[in-house]
Length: 208
Image 1 (cartoon, rainbow, N blue to C red):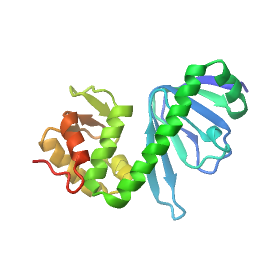
Image 2 (image 1 turned 90 degrees about the vertical axis):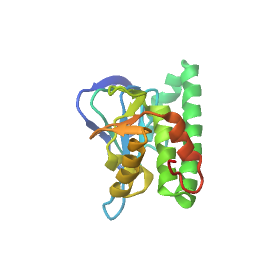
Image 3 (image 1 turned 45 degrees about the vertical axis):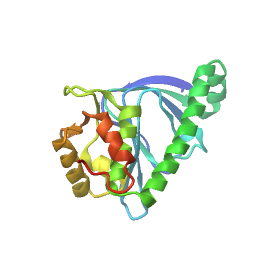
Image 4 (image 1 turned 120 degrees about the vertical axis):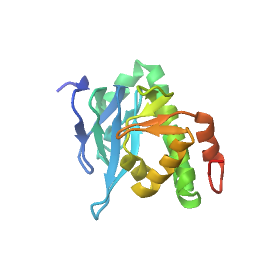
């Protein structure tokens, strides 16, 4: 098996499962990958979504998967074996810098999410999460709006740490105020300024 390989995923595909020995690193060219964990009592929680130019995989750590990863249909990625990564990056300094910046950025984002989880209301956490996802993983909206995300409301609720009902109520309110729109499997951005305002309000994040 080659140490590097580019593959297109025509159907939704599980890349690796939690606790798998999987010494590979992935670099997304197009499409998206969903990352989720499963608790000891069987509860599933979505933790992140990776888009184009994202680096991820157990090979960036000890080669053992800490979570599960699923490539959505249409995703194209390069897969690099852990032991081949130094040689691969040695001839690609721009990608080395990109990888370092992403690792640093994810650490910062994790600190923000942990802080918000402990101190902020669900509305503020949701506004922060959607702003972040639209900025970094949003794509051209096929529904006539600015950007969209291929995520269900259940997946959003899992990432933000709230019930689907509570998240749906907030999204419905924001939809009425033309901040976002949604379909069964997409969340669409209409007004980035209003969404940013909701994120910055420390106490209530209400729409006037």
